[in-house]
Length: 371
Image 1 (tube, rainbow, N blue to C red):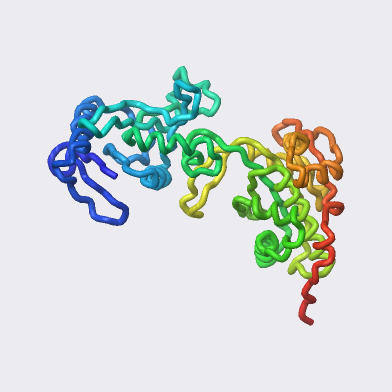
Image 2 (cartoon, rainbow, N blue to C red):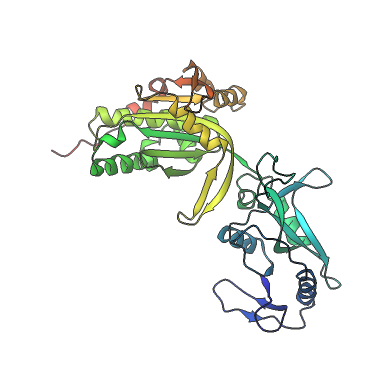
């Protein structure tokens, strides 16, 4: 990775910087870098306005895909995705430079920024525009990055401005605020341990597949958000988890009596790198919708699992003959349209999770509590 620093050494001097190593000037015979430096010096005579305050005040030429990923994570830079001439997804470009003979071209990446008030771009659907950045990639590296954009599991896709589709299972512990803090810790920690303990899921192929599809889990204080790729797996996970909680309660194996509400929704979300958790986090309609579905259940009702109409549509369209879609649909009842606190109507369906409990779960040998 190269950077061009106007305030270090001679003007426009190229500095090679590797992760965890001291910065040092590049060798003068490196023609591609010299060409890059010359171009940057020319363009910096007419600086553009940067709207991302986290980007450093110098231009950077990346050499590898991992350098792009790590830098953009740490500096909150989101490459903008555009369609190329063939209609395929590609990274948006600003300036391009033809470097020394035999080294090809380099491109300045467009990164996501908020448009100025009054801009003609204010009406864009996602509320962002592509801003020409100081981040440069070679033609070959640009192709490598573009190849990952169609893969929703790719870190490059998550890093970009192109949203992905995910399923969110909101699990809320009823009357959580009425419990004492020590009991709240036991409840939240117990819920997480149930989700992660393999022997609670093994023996039921559908439960095993559902747990394998779990991408991450986010603690929200009075519960958890479980994130999945597939609506069928997510819904079966919710039903199985609900059954587990009730069975543990019946066997007096849960440290505190617990009741719950679960809402399942699928939709598009943007990803961002959570520096504190060292993992991806989510923003957008998909994750917000999960909370809305859970909220329309109402505080007077608990120990239930609701799914949105969009989840049900995906289950109806499922072609996975070995999946749980048919079983879930045969145990889902229409609960009509209900309004959330913003006045939006949600058509929701209640899943009879008791009917989905497998024989392997019913016959699980529970460890008796110590007397």
